[in-house]
Image 1: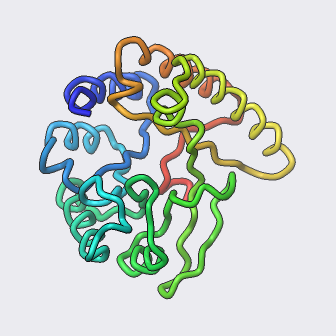
Image 2 (image 1 turned 180 degrees about the horizontal axis):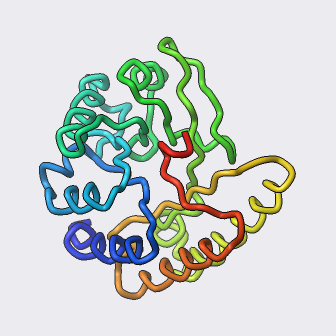
Length: 217
């Protein structure tokens, strides 16, 4: 993980900047404090900061989950100037109270549910919280660290997913394809080229656009 923050992040940043892509950054509230250069670079490049807890601790193990949400929001707001509107729980972890707590504190979308290829509303005690499409299969952690696929699998799956969603969108309306990468995995020298080719392949498809979570919202 330390390699990702020291080296891998900068490769991914360069790959995105070269292609005019401003991704959504799932970020612990501790990151602006522990890695201020990384947080500042992402902010200055126009990346969206999506809340990812305050520390990388499963939400259901916390005694004060609401306090964690407040801490994460405050840290991100101090770095970017605005609180986050999106959320991804560490490890996609929640309790039954999490959606209510997020909506209570101004979070408008959450990517934890992985239930659809389009945003769908979830009722909470404080108004709707939108479930934002996310992926545990177009994701380098399960793909490479758990399933031990070669880096090329990221390109193959992403293109197959994109082509099918583009085909469906012609008659069903826009679809959302989440692609999740991590600096310590996709930012290493032997994988970054596959990520770059994948981004180029996405950009080449007519009808495909790169969008942040807040833009999709």
